[in-house]
Length: 53
Image 1 (cartoon, rainbow, N blue to C red):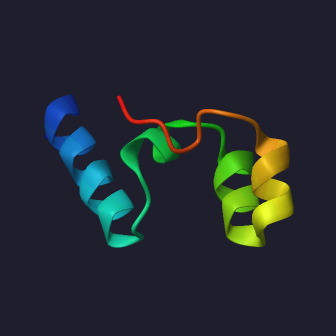
Image 2 (image 1 turned 90 degrees about the vertical axis):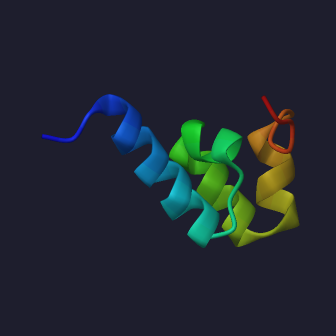
């Protein structure tokens, strides 16, 4: 059985594979899609996308 810690590490590795910030991965999926769709959508998503921690 996989522990929550190991699951979190796995998710972080997946996010790293897609070159996404772990902070971004934790946020609402619309922000990720907006970031993929371009500048305008990313700006509409709001502040704090690139902040870490």
